[in-house]
Amino acid sequence: MFGWLTSWFQSEPISPELKKEIESTINSQKIVVYSKTYCPYCTATKDLLSSAGHLQNAKIIELNTDPKGSAIQNALQEITGQRTVPNIFINGQHIGGNSDIQKLKQENKLEKLLEQ
Image (cartoon, rainbow, N blue to C red; front, side, top):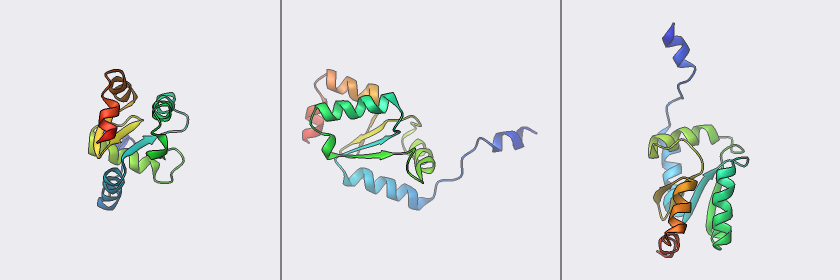
């Protein structure tokens, strides 16, 4: 009985093509933010990037409007260990979420990272 029940909550295996697509996006863009349009933490991240003048350089992928959004989110969890959004990458490096980028800004480390 539990096998049937837990099967409802297991995600489908991530295709190698999707992982390659995500990794290509991450490595070809200075800033990548996997986001959801209704998420207040995502909005805070985008506001921070905007106020720092970097939003125009960012690739924002809204998972709730992308047809592959759910699969992308599952793949990101597999790649980074993080399921929540925003899921932020700078210079191909996984930064984490909103609290992580806010901390970088407070510690005056964000600009240095973005200048690389």
